[in-house]
Length: 392
Ligand SMILES: *Cc1c(COP(=O)(O)O)cnc(C)c1O
Image 1 (cartoon, protein in one colour):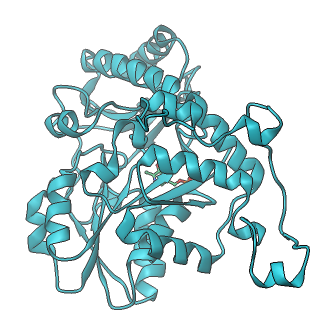
Image 2 (cartoon, helix red, strand yellow):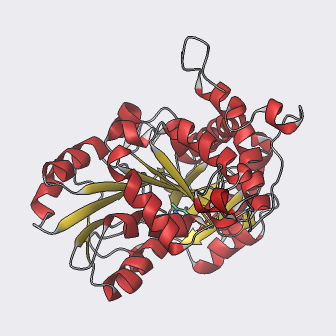
């Protein structure tokens, strides 16, 4: 739908609004219907044997899931998209589609922690060996590759600490040795990082975050280029993965406003990050869109925007002072996940979840998700909190 008569591509905001729906198919209603169903029936034995028609069984797709799949595929500019019941499940699908027993996986050290647990748990049990590498490695990743390295996993910026990776350099080294590049692109979304344009073969995302956007749905997706489309599709089918139609609908609904929400998250988060940089209680702000950030040049080269999630190091202080800062915040919920309309804060320690690099912050570290509230209200809330920290 989002292609003009002359097959011209529309801009990304138009694509987000127009794709995955066709009012003519829905009695004129703007949105596609929520189709519930397991069984699909055929009128005759001959039709059944030929599996005639578009659908065969609810697990294998429905008009509702196809609407989201179609929209995401155009959003990614990819050959195939599979839906998954959570972001972590999308990560697992991406890895299981590219790796087999006896294979070696290179995993970035700054990966989302549950992905690390998948590698050190299930994948290890299946005979897949993982080595963790420094996120600042670019083409030097070549030195880490073995004859049986079948996949290099990137997540940029990294979870908790926001290191930006040189994805094209890593992809060049991986492809030269026949390995797949799998990326967790949850932070930027395809709106701000077109993963497949930078050499990523299989891009996984937690739709739970910005796609859903309202902290009310768990969903994920895996996007594959032509080379890996068949493997992702087959693995998805064999695992029997599917999502409930209401969750699929919520994700599609979230997609319509993704562009305007991300623009607001981006502007407010950058404003808060710059303000934090000016504060004496703050030692360092980890936000790749800040000129001071070590990953800024790479971010500027490859990304077209920044989302609302970043972190900062406080100057040294006690756990009690951190608790006084965070417990007293009025507008920031203390909780995991992010990408919803609401602001969130968590204290974190990346030390126990790094094995290939050392994490040595100046003081306690806090991650913020900047929501859609008035940014001046958020800054006032943080200012009062930092005063409590300074007094602690
Ligand atoms: C939240 C998150 C996931 C997992 O998503 P769920 O839907 O919670 O399973 C994966 N990767 C990253 C980077 C995330 O932040």
